[in-house]
Length: 400
Image (cartoon, rainbow, N blue to C red; front, side, top):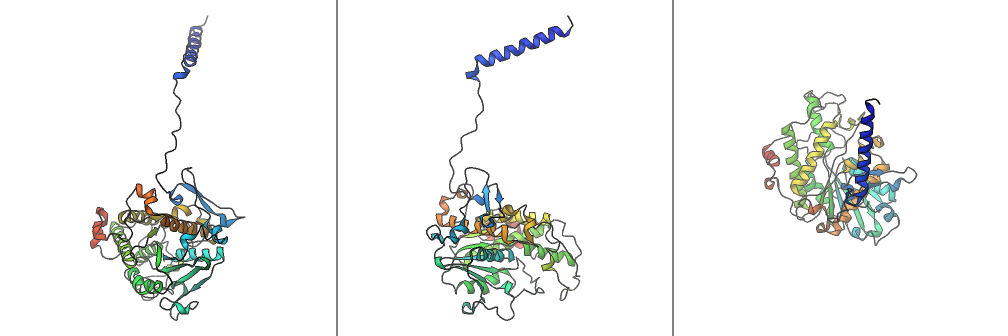
């Protein structure tokens, strides 16, 4: 017999012994089980859950964010309910004004709502609602409010256009720029005047600042012949957080008690001509050459997005991470702007669902059980913030 014989025999005996042990002790063998799902903490926000954007080109209006987890259902198809004129399901929109403060992505999002649902849409001067449908002399139609109506609900959606957090009128050479340039001044002299002429004061406010801020920093760097591929400096990060916090506080003071949601920036992706809207000949800005600059680099977009989330946490306001919903769909953009499909439903579904969530009461939300939200009408000032990084920004001057 070869030397392998005893080895093979021993292995066979060992295997039989293991099988015998497992068989006669099968009731004692513990098989790990998937833990039972936990009871939901409260009303979840599907747009804050991991998921995917469902888009069917044959039925584009059914585009929807679908959470992967089973504990949070997708949002209702609010567009279909508007088409069906389901006043019962949409009762939370009755006699309401929805104010969206931000940039052209926000303005286009509201336009997409009108186009998808066949709703009335028209421009109005800030100071004269009776002149609706007219663009006042000296203004560009992109910089004035556009109103969208849902007549059978008596609902008004309207926007206020801002040039980001720019505090030095850096964009004064833009053809669509019109004073005042500073966001807080626009709130006081334009947006408040506009909403004061509507049937109802704002009952929900969405606010965004990001793209214009990246262009603001990029234009400064272009003059200095610095690359926008370099991350924003610590001083700039502090400046941005202070400016955003101050703006949130100012909006809260202007419309006290009105829910405010911060919309987060999306990644622009391959830019090509995406920075063209912020390019100029240098007239009036000595040393600013005309050439292409990529203002929307991934590294800086990531910095803005992270700061948006931090500021939202600091001041206790909820956020809509549109960038997370839109990630991967950059091929469906015209420059920086998401296209009607799937961009329209992705934007509008989130906006309307968050309005509905507010109608249910924040005490019902799962979010309120995981982080503190400021009581409505009580967004803290910069001086009241507790996080050191926010406090450091108190004395930062300018965005350089």
